[in-house]
Image (cartoon, rainbow, N blue to C red; front, side):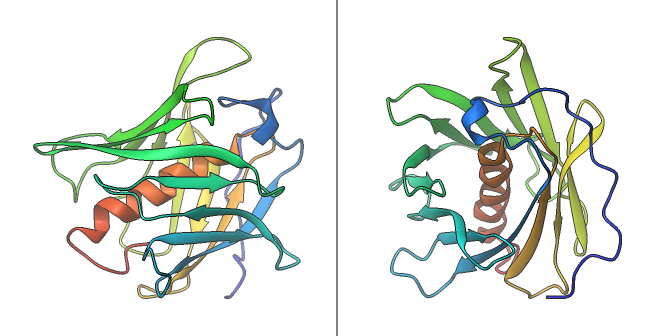
Length: 197
């Protein structure tokens, strides 16, 4: 994959932001992500660091019959993603290993193809409910994830059918929220257009 020539200006988060400080690093993070299309579950994702070591992985294809589990760099369960689907409404809930629901990822509107994706969570440091917004209207190239109007992550791909992505995450941003948002986007888009990831 060709590296991004110019990264977007990332938010300067002065404290860990997310559902757990355990998943917030004090420096920017760059990962290479790809979907394992030939896995038995058909929906596993790998997020590797710049040394090509697995940083985070998901196991299981999230749908109404099966959950996806995100494992951290130590191989420990970080969050479990469960799909919730009603008529024209899609969402994924993220829960800790103890079963506590800590965030929800959902479409920003009724029309799947046009709606941005939002991730709602309670910031563990301030107790405030926050909303991430993932711009999904771009067909290719770079997409950005916003918090309070500032970029906290970006996703880059070389071309439309590429299965690999470069994911850049701002310092102090909870990377499990970013990954859950990316995975949810792929799940929704797979319903009408393969190779959306």
